[in-house]
Length: 542
Image (cartoon, rainbow, N blue to C red; front, side, top):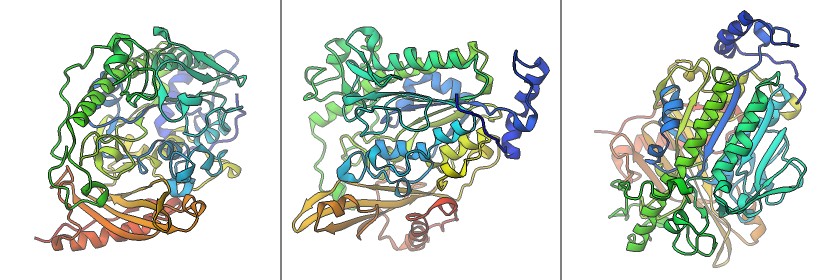
């Protein structure tokens, strides 16, 4: 276990845990453990549970999550992945920074992304908590690009990441490897008991939580599940239902694969069809949308299958959360544990004619479920905007941890601990949304497309840019937002939540557009405290 260093707790964080500290002192010290002074009380345990590519409406498959976290915690209804793509989103959780600061600008080298691109890998949330006496553990899908590690990433006392194909690209619900402490992979095969979601819960999360019950200090567990992301399966009823070819063949097109016990669940579940689904008139949209044809019958079949199979696969994740909560309760740790549930990002499922995908600034891709319960948390629903850079800041304040100078990096997020304790949220907050594509060939070299924008409680505003380069290496190194602004989108979500009408050229919205562009100018290259921006935006004229 990492050595404990001195901590200074904020008054609010101390207040959140003071009741638990008093109760512990009333019961007397545990054997071989002296009672702690109130100001130096250990922080709460922290469990972060992450799903992968969870789209709108899928929360219906998570009744335990809804009960244990949604009913007994805070639900953030406008939570956003600020770069809606797997690796950048996970890097943001790990660092508390926007992608333009942590350096992971995509999933692979052609985007300037992958785990290898993360700046200062040793300066991360796990390392900060570890330096403060937390035992730290990770299990599941890590950042893309770390395929066959020889040692755990920095900051983790226990790291059990999926390796090889299971940890990068199209993942496997069966026949996968997990990194073990001695550096050799542990292989799981094709038996029912080898279903990946169940393995991560049974063989990693539950034993870890049980072992920590007898340890003297707090722990931090990040459990990154695979559903409802697509992936290979095995030749059984669930695999055949959720694949258009052999379920284990990577040349086939799979949805998420449920375990056998849920093979027939959600077979006829209604599939969401918002007004933006297969949008009829896309002439006011950027070229990436306006050039898309209407969805085909085959597209509709795939979308329906993805949704229904995703729901069935999520039920296994929900089982895992139930077992984790039960284990925390049985070991006497639940009342002193912060539990966070979120997705890395959302996913498009036919909206604006996008059959599958993310890395676009529309609501279905940037919106994520976010629920938090824990000591001192006042159950509520929050509609003010929050971003995933806020998670690290929130957990650090819960822990009362002070980052050692040698591990420090700028903190772009805003702690939500006051909101969790019942304080009013910031309704005028503006959250940066950013993203970029891989380098692509152009007529005279190479090009990089990207987008930058802001999401407020009422508005969504985005600028699409393109930069041209002679050499591919220059394109790989291009920052988000490089080049000229070619197209712009503006949506008034209070009147048009489905983003059907682009108001960027509507004169009634000239003042909001100007103000939103100003907010973007403040945020797109921000660092640290300057990334927390709050400013009211004018209503439209008339």
